[in-house]
Structures are given as C-alpha cells and as structure tokens.
Image (cartoon, rainbow, N blue to C red; front, top):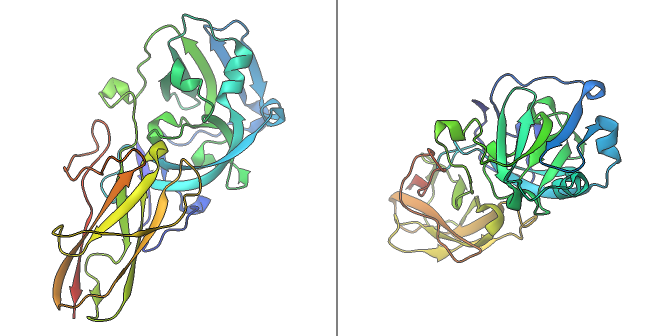
Length: 300
C-alpha cells in the first residue's frame, strides 16, 4: 500500500482534508459520479443498485470518526479525524433483506481491493457508507464517490471507492487477511505526544504545556498519564471532551521542569473499559502496533 503523511507539532481536533493521511492498494481509481453505481447483492432477498443520486437521496447522518492505518507505528502519522456524512449501512441491509445463511458482508472497491465484516458487526448502526468528508464531497484520495466508515476498526475495513456490497455465506478473506493480517482489526489503545518533540530544549523552572492526543477506537479514552522521569512516576493529564464516541481525545499537561539535563517523557492512555495502553513494544503486523512513545528533551 502507499502512504503519505506529514510531521506536525500540533494536531487540530478535526484534520483538514488536505492534511489527512492517504493509503491505497493501487493508484486511486477515478470513477465519475454519473457512471458510478453501488450494487447490493448476494445472500439477500431483494438485490438492488444505487446510482450516485440514489445514494444522496437516502436518509443520511453525520458522525465524527477517527481513522488509523493498521500499519501505523507507535507515534505514527497515519491517523486523522474527520466529519463523515452518509447513509447507515444497516438501513441498506435492512432494505436488502439479509437471509439467515449470511455470514459476512463483503465490501468491493473499484481498484480490486476488498474486505469484510461479520454480518453481526455489519448490522450495527454505527457503520456508514460515506460520501462527504468535512462538509465536501469525498476527495478522490479518500474514496470518491463513496467509502465505508467502520468505527473502532483499522483503516483496512474502511473500504474506499466502494462499488459493491456482497453478502456471503462464508468467512471471506480480503486483501489483508490473505497476507495474514488480523481479520477483526480492532484498534489498540495508543497515545501521542505532539509537543514537545525529541531534541527540543526547554528552560528550567518555567511552565510548559505539553500537548497530545490518545485514541482507543470505539472504547473511548478514560485518562492519560504523563511521566517526565522515564516511567518512574506518573501524573494525570487534562483531557478535552471527545468530539464523538469514535474520535481521538486531546490532552494537555502542565510541567515546570526543575532539574537541568535530559528528561524522558512518556504518555500512557487508559481506555473506557479501564484497560491500560500496553507498554509492550509490538510491530504493526499482524494486528496493530503497541508500545509507549518516548520523547527526550534537554532542560537548561
């Protein structure tokens, strides 16, 4: 897959479209809206097809959701939050009449990519076929004309350039699963330190406000703790209210360093279930990275 990102010292609660990370299986395919159609087919009673005007005419809703790529490392940049507008998947599946032998809902893209969800997951009402992002039609790089938004799961499940929803009676293995990546792709709890960054110099005995964010998919963030001594002691950061049940949470922490020298800063999040972010370093493969970000600053 291709990945584009940029390093930033601060993070807006909503990521502008032009700054939102992009991943793609191949070069983004261009499908003109007047030639696009979404077919709903398979183990259903009433197959149907929606044109782009048909999709826009369906009852719609808006939700703020954070997306993260499964290949994103600890403190990685392949994460962003946007306001998505579209049609609830459940309403389309209800119209189609899913039969009892259905096991998976498969999402097909114009570039040949595909992924799936269990039918139980697909029928929950938080999933969206989105066609607007931050108030404008989806940019091409983010799935125009339509894409999946699946809160709580890594980006592989948010199929872009959507052309088909197929209900099947088998356990479908998509592009990532055929390469032995996780099938569930549930987002892990992580925290990011945006400011300061490693290599920064700060004056002793002067207040400094650290900033960052934390994300735990649909579980939400209960607290973020900060250590300025390499993990010896921890203190709670101040959390901003979440934008939605499916978004990251911004945090800040006031620090007045006393001792000159290098200081190791760590952040550690606790999700809404009370489970703490894992300090065990783990690469992205096969089910997402874990570990704690470390920032080293010099106090003078």
